[in-house]
Image (cartoon, rainbow, N blue to C red; front, side, top):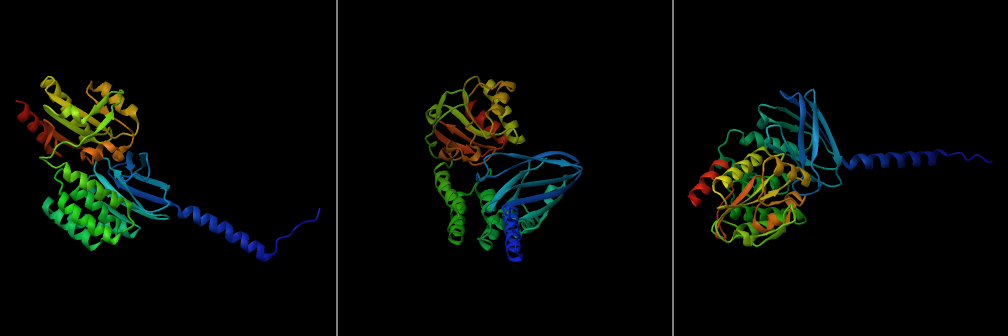
Length: 338
């Protein structure tokens, strides 16, 4: 058999091909590593609010350090659910590498470096660290206008003006228009603009939006169930401490008011068994929707809920309150029923 030898040119071309394949593979990944003080061992969660990844991942911390790597074909935003249940945005891009450092007892002073957008978010975090809530909202609006091409602006728009206990939909509509003018191909912004049109309709004083769905036990639930009496529709997840406690309080209020309070929970766990297990352990018998679609659930869009925890209080089919915390929710329910 005649032996075929590689010429230097062919060898060089093959080497370049291997190198390009390797670079292409590395370029479609995003890497995050970090170090915590006062948090030696444990786990925290990571999810993508816009649905780029349909599942929730966990990140393990060993010796105060962690590393995480994921597919990244195009830029997107992920959110870390920290040990104290606060949320931290991370802006991923193909081939990006970032480093996170934080004291677990002062997570608001977290430092993230490695890419422009994450460093921009770190600078904004420093800017608002000692500001009052109204000041934070004003600073966020200014930042959004000054950095309208950055994904950080999109995150801040949702965080400070939409998915908050005191949303400002009119300002959000104005700001999202400015962002779309600078990012005309951004489908997330266009989806947010469409959602805002629904949320404006779901403001206090409006009628509850029409919806129909199947609960976890196969029963039909719909907006018609809330056309008379006092009702609360709320979101929760097993990984969100505040929403979990809010649900426990609502169950106790339902028991104390003996059928005069209509409840519907919308569970945002991706695994229905997590919801089913909680219902059993907490003795919850009222309807729960768990469609596994997380924040992309069509029911949320139809009735104007956009975060966890979130809630709408309804009297005779009309929205009378929304986005209340636990204490406000209990006071509102007792006021309406007693």
